[in-house]
Length: 256
Image (cartoon, rainbow, N blue to C red; front, side, top):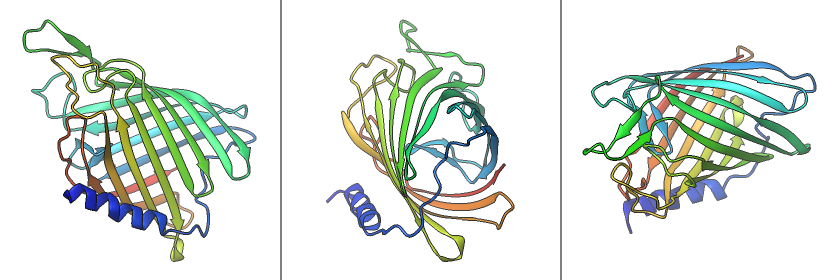
């Protein structure tokens, strides 16, 4: 059996063996709306199994949610690369999003939004002979459904960019399990369905692959808004079929 098959099997044992004790609160509709945000320091930034920053990472987000369910927000992270300039070893990812959230029952809620990914000041990537060009500024349609301790996500790429094809779909399933002493065990799996629309800039070898499996612990510090976390990320495959590395990510987040 391939080493990544062992990783998936291990995750399924943890995931299916979990029994919900106390639901982790999903982002609920507020009757009055309001502003919320977060500041985080991570040991590294891993996204869908791939490395976005293998050094200490700063992240920040701000979101406004109206009582009607409409919401808009901004999120940013430091990177150790520039998507449009390979000579640079640093950069910033800017995410701007707008969408709608609602509840279908006390245990069932949903969120849907459009997000735009802007790297530094934008830019383009060219093929070696400069006959083909792809932008680094992407957009996705993000959807999530939360039922008690479970979250299901479906995200679809809307445009061709240097790192994705329009129609690429990312699927995720997460579970949160309450432990004693305010600890929480978090597990998730993420997989991609890749659309074959390649050129000299982007190549796809896999139509479908699991990208990552996450197992972690988190714990808030009383009523301070500060939360610590530790996640072990089992890397599986990317769109090229290459093995992704495993990572341990430590984090400290302040939510307000």
